[in-house]
Image 1: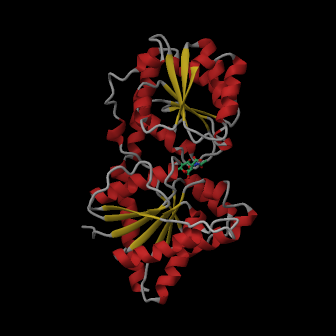
Image 2: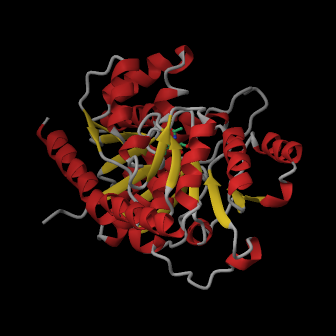
Length: 382
Ligand code: GMT
């Protein structure tokens, strides 16, 4: 029987995968009876249910003309100290190393001065390691704060290996894969308005991301352009980000703007996935690919690149197909193979959903609880 804990969660509250994962984790922990405190600069997007076990504490960074850069780490570490003391938080779980692990370590040191012990669990999500964290401007501080965490987890084996390759890490890194609440994605939208978006003879292809260069948004359009020439289809582009304009322009260049719908950020991703036949994720790198897992849980097969941790989620020939980054003809060929024949599509849909059950919230969250328990035990005995 696990003890009920008071857990502080620090994350990016936006539409990114790490924030979504952290929020879903906090909500599930609260349902299991733990008291969860989200400490972040705005209320996380998926945090809708404030209840007696879920609390949100906003980090404010006051503007001051002298500052060219606002010192968020400073405000966050002060807030962490105050919240740990005010709510007697047992453990801090920080998602995304930069700057959360660093700010948490500062808070830990400040609390130590007052005789308060607070262990820190850091979860590495991907870009904090592969894209941003390994930049020479950040690397020293990122290495330091990972090594100073009491426990470190990564969302895939691939990310663990990347971290060990790119940084001098002495700490053990435990792999705890991302998860989703499978029940939320079981098709409850049988009568969804598919007809509003596509004709009955058309397939619906979907992409969901933050439209950053790492997602290779133009590859999504390129693959779709090839596919729709062979199978009548519509493309749903869900999300916002710097590559959106370029993608819209590419659609115009190809004359397919009437077949591609840019939906912006949506809080109804599961509804959109419910009427999708195929999901595209051609990313340059992806530590896990939470968006692909959400698609699979909705019985949507995935055409993806084979980079990073994606092969740990999307299983070749079962839940979809994987190609080397930028192999657009191969991706399009595989996509057509899945969607052109209803029987084949049905087989992939079923298999994708089956694979996704491995990552169900009820199977994965106990691993985090075990890490908290173990970390707390170790910190008491030190
Ligand atoms: O995908 C992004 O660019 C956002 C980023 C984030 O931190 O929110 O996502 C990363 O973390 C997700 C949750 O663990 C993973 O599913 C994504 O694969 C990972 N993104 C990359 O590695 C590019």
